[in-house]
Length: 111
Image (cartoon, rainbow, N blue to C red; front, side, top):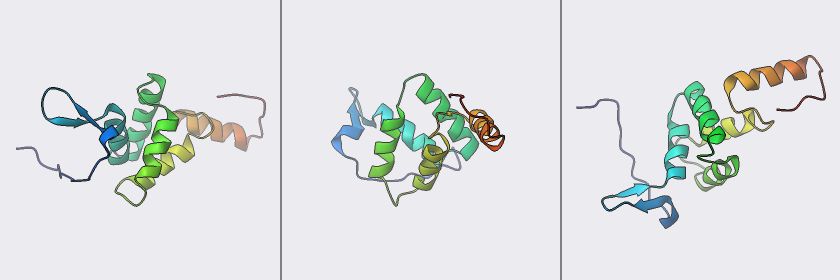
């Protein structure tokens, strides 16, 4: 038996559910955003980097999903991820580099 898992029942809009000749599954975007909301922050930020660079989900999709789940579990983390990646950084390391460049008053660079 797997320990540490807690099921959550949340009513989902139809566009968040996919039928694959079996039980209904959450859509790719919904599953990705749920993982971003549930993982430890550093892992979630690394996952965000992978998801966006591999074009599994876009920043706009994460923003839309975040708006639709305000007040739910994990939303503060999604907001934090979106805040940290607003300058184009898509990982914890890139965010730190951007902060160092800003603190050094270096301008003219792009993410």
